[in-house]
Length: 227
Image (cartoon, rainbow, N blue to C red):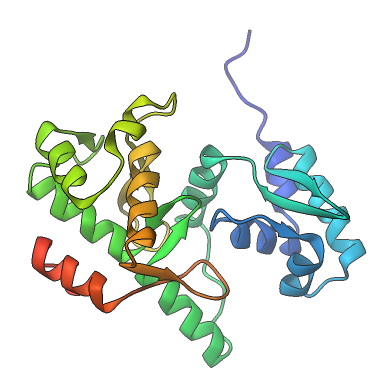
């Protein structure tokens, strides 16, 4: 049996600009209706549904019916990590407006990559956690006993992350920083705790997150990170 994989179907699914917009929007881990995705890409709802059907057939997106509406989401964290990694070798979209410039700045500073944190914030956290002995090996980001105790002190559900069938820690290539950030079950648990504790808040639209004053105090006090 050949070990080569057919990447053409995935490549074709991402080739249309509208479908690329959809995937980028869904990278924040949300589920959205076709109409909302279509408006963001500048296409009609019927056209959006056709494009979304291609993404569903390619296994990149799932569709869930809720009442009279269908909601679309990325097929899982592996898809999110793959798309995030593709972003590191893709050309950046031209900045043609102040709004796009602000959005690009927000995404580079801090954002969600499916269910975990990404951007400069996430990379800075990985640096602090590896320097502090919470994570071992910058290429694998393995959780240490010191790290487990530290995360528990922050209120992160470490035990729940370890018990899941999903890998506890995984690395994800950050497309804006070209460096690794933390994903896996622990990365998701950390991001969930940051939101729950009010250290970061999601932007009303898009994938960006904002660090709150409480979050800035935590980052500076615990790890010397200036948000």
